[in-house]
Image 1 (cartoon, rainbow, N blue to C red):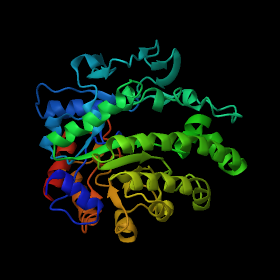
Image 2 (image 1 turned 90 degrees about the vertical axis):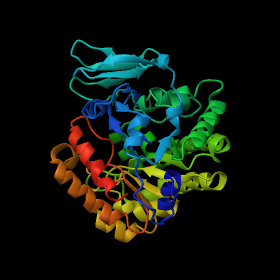
Image 3 (image 1 turned 45 degrees about the vertical axis):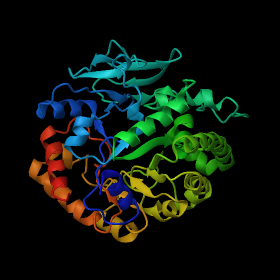
Image 4 (image 1 turned 135 degrees about the vertical axis):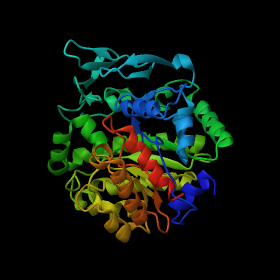
Length: 411
């Protein structure tokens, strides 16, 4: 099997010839710039770039040399954008790590060593001193729901996740964006045998929290569900319009479309299953059905936390893949997930805990942990190896190397 065949077999619940692996195909399955810098230095790699393509999370786009070294099976088509040297400039982080930022991103250092980022002159993100990612500073609907959503697009641009979007969406305002997107997908399809991913977001619950703020939106689910539904319908109109042109442009070339909606905390879902079924499941179903009916792409949902209680509904909604499989959360034990849902959905993640094991264990302990998780998740397909979310700055390079050495035993 080649890489693409390996990924697609796993999603189709056919055990492939070896464990398929992801690193960096999404902004929630990659590596922080600081950890990447330490890794490439430990590997003594020259002529490499540390390009921070997701500036909010300070996540690097791994270079092909790293993907080849670790035999990564999938690519984000966003990597085909911003390839010119003048699309980037050097920037020194407070810990001394030298990275490259896209030229449109110009964070401003403050007297207290925090950084702020602006869009259209407004501060929309702040990174506190000592932190490694940016926080939201603007909640456009914090004072209440508007009478009309005619202005929704402009308000969404005030939120850091859209206002500071990663590639390819940082190019979406260009008049030739959609032809370029197709050319990018064609180029990657013709030059690589890896599976292709496009990150589309289309968040619903999360956009409610981005616009209203988390505490307000959680109360809104109970106290004013009619207003929530009105907002969700306005979001759906925008999301379906995006999916239409994505499917028309690259739906015959790309293999996986990544949605996002963090539905879980460490101890359980943000809402009851009944609330999910009433407000979000019908709309998630509509998004999945549109992709399945208008493209060859599989649907991938990124949702952090304990989502065990929602898994049957997510499967019924039509998701083919779930990520990051947060195995340290309540009810998210690998054995339980594989036993109860392993024939119905693909686990993309859960391969190595990034909270405790990867940053704090010894290399041998990392290997033992990875072996155990692979032996649980891999049989019968339905598994793509990935860490539980991004590799964080405090992870020693020796543990990253040990993790991939353990993965290689199953390839």
